[in-house]
Length: 246
Image (cartoon, rainbow, N blue to C red; front, side, top):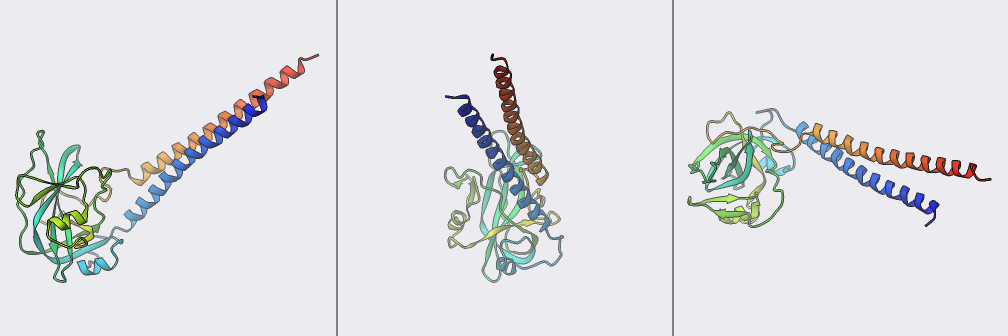
């Protein structure tokens, strides 16, 4: 292989690697913009509150929801939920509006002991005026294994992810019987457990995505700079060798 071909392949490899790094950087910027847009949509507590039926008309928007809902029997414990560095579960129970729509209500977080014995929860009953943030459910991550498994407590299931059709089936609802988002209860309400309205728990904030994007773009620039320096040195060496020939 000639030196010219070697130089061409070197530049080609550098451009491919730099392109891959730029792709990672662009993805980080996209995640930053997505999360920033979500945070900017968060309504002020109690401002322009909507009912569950109204929220369902624009399900992808963030709403402050206030409605009188009837709790349904059945509790879901979402596993692998961290809070202040401790492992635990989030407690969910479905509630239905007068119009018939049902939504999973985030009742808060409970810690798990070292032996991972499931906590005993007291289900909410009756109709209550609930309010909180209409927001996406926690990210499911890898979808491995069944989404639900039974626990020793009756009508209580341990979930690896919030797969709404599977939960609806256990609750005796149609596959599309649960709203596509969850109601994260206002921490000021007395019912339930420890909770907050943090939209990005256990995940990177927009600023961290920006930092990673800068790192990826910097690595792409470094690859091209190194390729340029090597190319310049190779040409300089050939020039010296050519100049020394009689």
